[in-house]
Figure 1 (cartoon, rainbow, N blue to C red):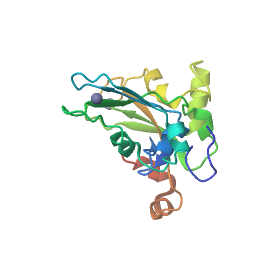
Figure 2: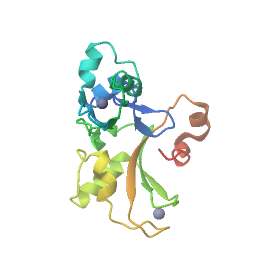
Figure 3: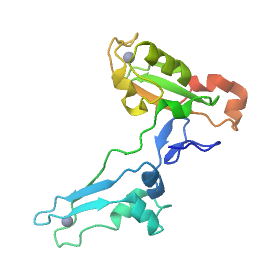
Figure 4: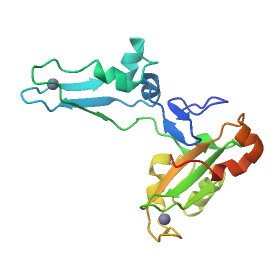
Length: 189
Ligand SMILES: [Zn+2]
Ligand SMILES: [Zn+2]
């Protein structure tokens, strides 16, 4: 996935400072992430397969996927029971596309109960650490990174890590005041 010089990779947004999947049809298309549905209404066996790239071709790219789903409701006397789910994105985020950016860090966050422990890494440091352990490289996917961490959390002693990309907007007042310390104040994504 190609990252633009000033923004997160296509299909991703940073609103709170933590990279999150964009909600528009175009964002789904960029991530190559289809949406599927099965209807649970009695007597209706409808199955749906929404291809975001096709929807973009119909000029629906700017609309939120949630709104588009509603256009597909079944018209049955006993209602619509369409149960939607996002398929896994075909295009995965990899560590190597986040190197060399002063506004980007990797955060490993403990997600056991109410534990608040986290640690912020330079992406380059993480790649180096993975290489040393022969556990990964720049091609390692962000999505699977948390599960690869086997060290127990120093606070709660559990092993339940989530890897997130922190993407700071350097044009904000917050960044001008705090700079790199901003990375320690970003809301859990
Ligand atoms: Zn139906
Ligand atoms: Zn913990």
